[in-house]
Picture 1: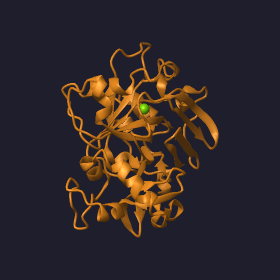
Picture 2: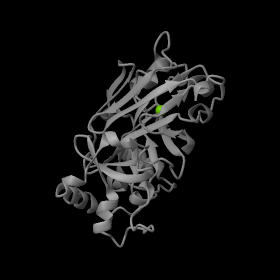
Picture 3: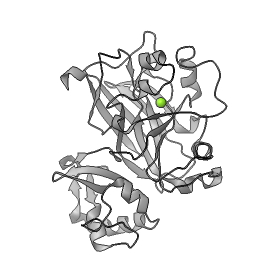
Picture 4: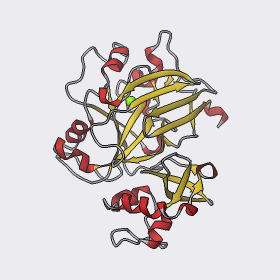
Length: 310
Ligand code: MG
């Protein structure tokens, strides 16, 4: 089951997406008929946005939602008639990211961003909420402050249940699902400031979507192709099974003495093939189109433009 946030009839709404990625069903219809005492009520009586949906999510809902709409195909709306927003358009906290979590990527940036050693503990940094844009949105080049804007396709974990000191074997219980992110990076700022926060935090530099694949669709361990392309030219191609620190390890390690909350987003790192890894480098340019794809989740597509045009 895929869950999405859309703009429809000038309102931000929650929906689920059919298995072909062609039609959507508004979750408001499910909640108007199958009201749950666990659902926080808005004036309409259902979760107002993806964060509240995830916070009050009950394990039986995905099956109930599938059954409800399976019997009511007439309620579907063509995906082409709605606007997809980022699945969590306004994260409540900074997005946590891992650096250097694929061996081949660590090797391609040796001596540029990374030292020669592979990490023995996950490397964390964050991106603020203002970086998030949806599929179809425009990545801005911020040409007055950076000339080295790069792409990084990543599998993103969406946390479903709060917890601290989570053992690896219970990590999956705390996951809501997965989406695709592009950890857009200003390489010159990343190098100039030494600490990565500034170079990873520019407006529009975290495209995310197109939706969240619920974990029931993708049980651990994940083996999914992860790829990116710029203007149709393949750049990154790997499998998420190649992560140095796998998903249970990330959740277990990050949650040590740290509270994970529903709706938290963790980007798991990018594979080899980023623009900086080429000689000469292939940074993003005005007019480029970046496609980030993960098997069984979908495609996140974003155009690139000079900020002065925005
Ligand atoms: Mg990254």
